[in-house]
Image (cartoon, rainbow, N blue to C red; front, side):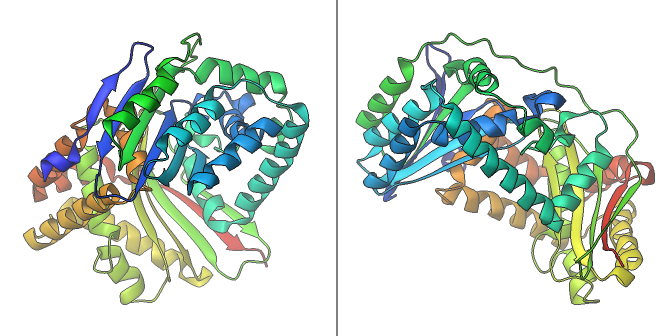
Length: 413
């Protein structure tokens, strides 16, 4: 079991990190590159620069558009996305077509030419994307909670950017970000699925010959220390129910408490036998859907519970969520609950490993946060070793009233 949770890791002479996870039974091959540049690296006045550049990689010139379309000739599909800590690009192609995919992806990532008319078109696309996110109650309420929890940390800045900043970006700002961050020593190349040693050599040749001439601008990582904002209520016309997001700051990815917090997430919110599912939906029918999540990064962590509820049920729902957090502090889970929560959490990890679309993202996340090809083994071992007392101690450390924040979106009458 453990052997399948590790991968080969090497660093090339130009600083490029390479992760290899072969699955010879697969019918396709995935070539992915994570660039260690996300929205957290942008200054507030440059909010959205990383995301704008990601768009320009595939749409920033006529040649880029033509090159990107090539991938479909090889039975492939591609995905480009930006998160708070990295930009992710991936191509999934028929086995035997990895050489062609490598030329496409390396060309898109390293080519430095962008066209002004394409920038103006993509600006409109991104503004539409921002408007769509703003119209989505779930997105808006989560973003509001993050701003309550983090007063200074760049996590509070939206990945997509703001209308004001998006309208200010120029070809020069895009080119500068590309020059600074899109260099081999700031990249993680990931090869998964069905590939041969010859495929590896071909891909590495495309990426190893790239020059290492950038000047990476990395921000100082620092934990948020300000007091969280207790509550924000937003009223909006056109809603038929309220949206609640309740949360608190927790620990970064490398912190010793994070596995216990992840296990608490499993206990509270994973599956239809989870405590919150039973209390909020099964017993009282307060919500159709809810999400409990512990999210951690290089220098942040937050735990949240988000759900849509009837406006008249807001107070009851908040009370029930708080009560469930309080129970973990005062009463350890039973051995049966602990074992179930561990199995659910490990099952989620193993299904991610089995999923060719999700596995490269998991490897990218682990490399950025742990820089260790055995990090997943270490994590699963920690989960298996946790006790009921570990969960209670961590709950008492973080689940305090002074740490709680609440974001509410309600119908405007």
